[in-house]
Image (cartoon, rainbow, N blue to C red):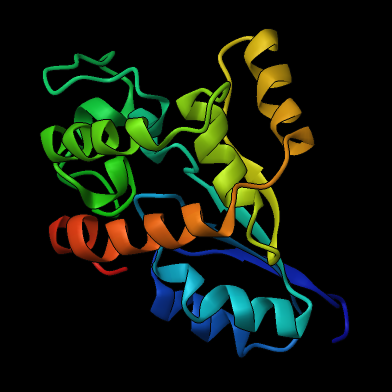
Length: 185
């Protein structure tokens, strides 16, 4: 009837994202994308950029793994999805901790920490990595205080990470992270 000219979609897998990119009128696409969940970078982001579709990144900090503040025996509040959806019991298996078991996710995030450029926190590094991808329009990092929200927003003023760092993180993902992810990517 012509009542909807454009719309957005939120997806979980690359397959879903590619399907949505084929639908006329798609204006934005919300995807799971971060250092520990990179498959969207291969085809989805370039296709979205070519079609003028905005990319909204959710879970840029991998449910907190990329803050560097979690440990393998972390306890979460009863109503926190990281407590009741660790293995995908409640909803999409790849949502909480990117589909990684908590202990493995913590181990992998600790292997990212030594790569931090001087002066950057793990959170800044992870958010800047997402923003460095030219197809990414915005990210949804979440915040528990006004100070945290301001700090997250300030990441957009930081200089991009070096290309060599991006290459190193792509190789790390392919060799060390991807084999451990559960659920479709």
